[in-house]
Length: 513
Ligand code: 3SK
Image 1: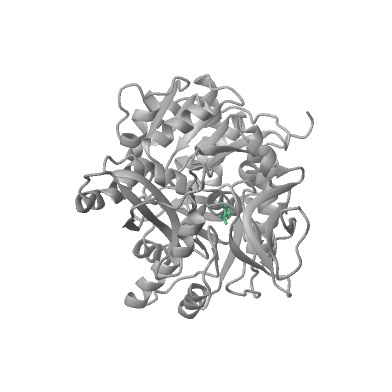
Image 2: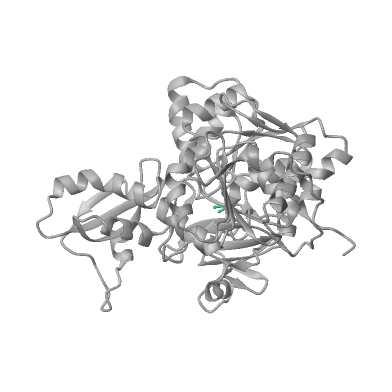
C-alpha cells in the first residue's frame, strides 16, 4: 500500500510536522488539571500501540473502552488506531448486565476501564471468556487486572499500521428497539469525513478554539466535538470526567473559557434555570451546538438572551457518526433542525420509498461519506438501515416550504432522553423484573421544559403493596439498565392496551399522555 490512510496520521502525527507539538491538545478541568500536548499525545499513542502489540492484542481485534473523559482516553483511542486495533467506545453509565452483553458481543480481548467504574464493570468482565487483559486507569488495580502505568511502562513505540480509508477503525454501540445494543462499525475515512464537513463547514472549528463538550467522548456526538473536530485543526479540548451538572458546566465555562460549547437540550434547559438564579459569568463562548434530541425553541431563545450566542441545533446519528442536518451560524430558526450539512444529501420518503412533498411527513434518509460500514453480526438490521448509499434514520421529518427540516417523531417507539436513545422495551423489561410488577409499558412524556422523559404504566402483581413497589421502582430500574433510563412518572393501571397477538400498543398510551 502506498498511501497510508490511518486516521491517526492526520489527527495526531500531522501536528508535529506542522509545528504544533507544544500546543495543548487536552486539558482536564475541575481539579484534575493534567494536560497532554500534541507531541505528548503522538508519543504516548505510539507507545500505546507498542503496548497493545506487546500484550498480544492483534490488529483488527477489539479493545473495549469504558473510560471517563480523561487524558488516557485519546492515548488509548489513537494508540489502538495506530496499531490497527479497534477501540470500542462504551457508555460509562450502563448496568453490569449490559456490559456483559456488549463485552461478549464484541469479543473484545482487552478492556480499559476507569477505576471509578470497576464495581459495575468487573462482574461483567470476569464473566467474559474472550477478555485476556483488563487495564485499570487510576486507583488500585485489583487482582487479575493491570494498572495503566504498568501496561504502558517501557513499551516501545510501534509504527503506524498501514491501512486504507475503508478499513474498520472503531466501533460504537447503539441501542436497538428490542433493547439489544448493536455494534456500529466505523472506518478510518469516516472521521475525516465528519471533520471536513460539519466540523469545518458548520462549526467552523479553528486552531485557536478551546472546546468543551458536555456530551462524553463515548457518544458519537462527543467523539466529534471533543476529539476529532478540535484535533483536525490543532485546537484544545477541555475534558471533564464527572457528571456535567449545570453548576459544573457554568464553572467550566467561566474558568476554562472554552470558545465552543457542545451540549444537549436537557442540560441547556437546566443550565438556563441555574443561570437565572446565579447570573451569567464572564466567559468566552463564540459557538454553542446541540444535538441528541430536538431543541425546543424556548430553550434556544432563552440561551441567546443570556449569552448573546445562538445554539446551533443539529441532527446526527451513531450510524452517520456526527451531525448531517443542522442550523448554521447566522441562520438559525429555532424549532427546526435546519438544512443538510455540506457533504450530505437528504430525502424524506413515504412507506413506498417515494419522496414526499413539502409539508408532508416522511422518514428521513441520509447519504454521506461518514456512514457506518454496518452493524456487527446483525445482517438483517444492517440491510434494513444501510440501503446502498442511503442510511435510514428512523426519524420522521417534514420539510417546510423554505426547505428547512422539522422533526416529527420516530418511526418506531424509540425516543431520546438527554440525547441518548432509550428503548421502551428495555425499561419495560427492567420494570417487569421487579417482583411486584406483572407487566409494564413505557412511553415518552414531555416535562416542564418540553423535553421527553420516560413514563411507565405498570400492572402490579396480585397482592403487591402498591406504595412500597412505587417507592422502589425508579432506583430498581437505574440499577438494572442505566442511570438515565428510569421512568420519571409511574402510573399503576389494571391492564395495558394490546394487539390480538399480545403486543403492547404503545401508541394508545402515547395518545393518553
Ligand atoms: O443524536 C444526535 O443528534 C447525534 C449527533 C451527532 C452524533 C451522534 C448523534 C446520535
